[in-house]
Length: 432
Ligand code: UD1
Image (cartoon, rainbow, N blue to C red):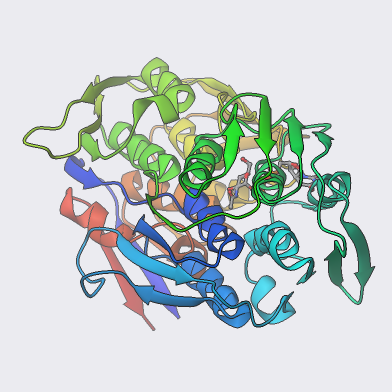
């Protein structure tokens, strides 16, 4: 079993290159299903979730090849997705159970092929995560939905028709699914209470470059005029704001100074505001000589407690909650973190407490009383972002922190130990 061993106490300083965003890449990788032409995606991160979705696309008949170069090196990968032939419209349990985002093939498949069958999704164990909003939205466009043996089947024998979709609450995945689907539905679709996450805008920009007619992405109301056909494109995946935010926390926790190359301040305003309140000096750096710029996060020498409520974008993201809890664990004074998106997203709490954190959970709120220091111990990663919170805690804990179950971390952080080691961390992946 692979483990990460982190010896805490090193100040981090230098530049970390931020990879392409997993959460943007996954929906973008479903767009080729909407066209017979090849779609090239650049700046794709090398992550287990990307491999899982590639396997699923392969199963559906999509050919995935490396576009230019051999795909090695530190920059993102470029892949060509050729869905000229869809050989199968069934997304099987064995692949879908590994990753919840597999549900994103449902809409594009039914839009192009008139039918799709997808196993009910698995993914991170952060609460009961239903897909009812995805299915209701597809029904609003005329799809017939049936459930059988753990599979959901959507059919549209006479094609899909534009319709009115009003989400009762914000869902990133359901917005993405219906946005892709509506591009090929006849007539106009209006999506209200749409998610406004930057990944939605990235997806819409890719679809627009494929010939889709979309307005309002990034706002609460998105309008899509269906077109007969989409064509191929080349699109660069946006930088990962959660990866960047996680390293921003590392900079402050270690009283360090990191330039997060490629990161975009506007994508991360809410978490950066909290970091500034806690003791970070933040600046946006322009790129020089054609190089991309980034966000610089530097400690002002102090670390104060803070309060957070997770909410859809542009408010504080749930995907940063666990990392900020690690930060609060060593801040002066008390912090309160309320998780308002997922009902079971405090699984990192007992693990952080094993490292000496003082955290009390009441319902959906956690009160964290900062302690002067954490102590290294064996801990278990429970989900993707929880794993990162343990790595962050390990960076400042006395002695060695050993993180087990690394597959969670590998789903979302590309070359974590290389990136951290390059800025001064003592961190090793061991196999025993
Ligand atoms: C995406 C992100 C995930 C992030 C989450 C919230 C990807 C691949 N994943 O997940 O990292 O934590 O957004 O920012 O982009 N819900 C329903 N019914 C539905 C769909 C969602 O009740 O049909 C609920 C969920 O259980 C959750 C809330 O809506 O409580 C928000 O979930 P959603 O925005 O859909 O998250 P994902 O798209 O799965």
